[in-house]
Image (cartoon, rainbow, N blue to C red; front, side, top):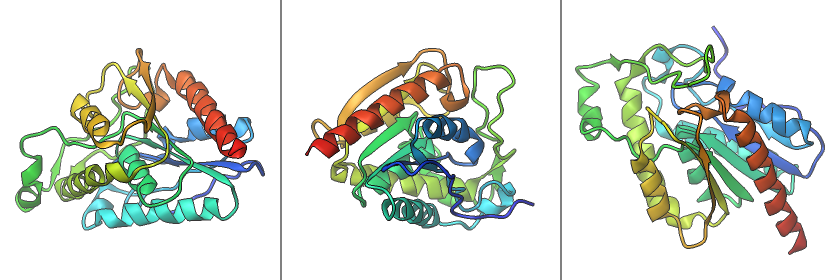
Length: 252
C-alpha cells in the first residue's frame, strides 16, 4: 500500500516562479503530473501533493475532515513561498475548490482552474451527512476522459462520508470567493459528466469584479481534461498566463 503523505514535492528548476498543482476528489496525482512535467520543462518549479486519504485505498477517505485537505495545500504552498517569489496554484475538479480556498487565505500570484468543482449538483447532496449512515459507498466518479485508454488512477468506490466533506468544503469555498484577489484563469471542458455548469455559475457570481481574467474552452475534452485531447492546450495556456502575470508582478 502506498504511503499516505500530504506533501510530495516535485524537483524543478531554481526559477523564481513555482506552481502548486492540486488533484481532485478520489483522484490522484496521475492527473496532474503531465501538467507539472510540462511546466518544469519550461523552467517552472512545481509541487504536486497527495491529498490525505488518496492514493492508498478508498476506505482511507472515511473519517477524513476536509480541513486536512486544506491544511495539506496550505503546507505545500507555504513551502513553495519560502523559496520562490511568484507562487501560482492550479487545480482540477475539487482541486480547483482547494486552489480557490487557498487563494482566499494566502498571497498567491494567480490561479489556473480546470473544471473546478464548487457545487455538487445533486438533490441528495445536502443529505449526505445522514445518508452516510445507511449507504457506505456509491459508484466511482472517475475516468471521464474522451481520450482512449487514459486512466487517472482513481478509487473504484466513493465513500458517502467523504462526499459530505466535499459538500462542506464547496460551501465554505463559495463563501470565501469574494476574498480571492489573485487573477483567475478558467479552462472549461465542453462536456463534463462530473462537474456541472452550476459550479461555473457559482464561480462567476462569487468572484469580485475583474478577478476572472480568462475563460478558455476545451472543446475536445471531458472532465479530466489534463489527461485528455486538450491537455497540450491546458499546458500552453496556463504557461502563458503564469508568465504574463509573473511579468506584471515584476514590473510593479
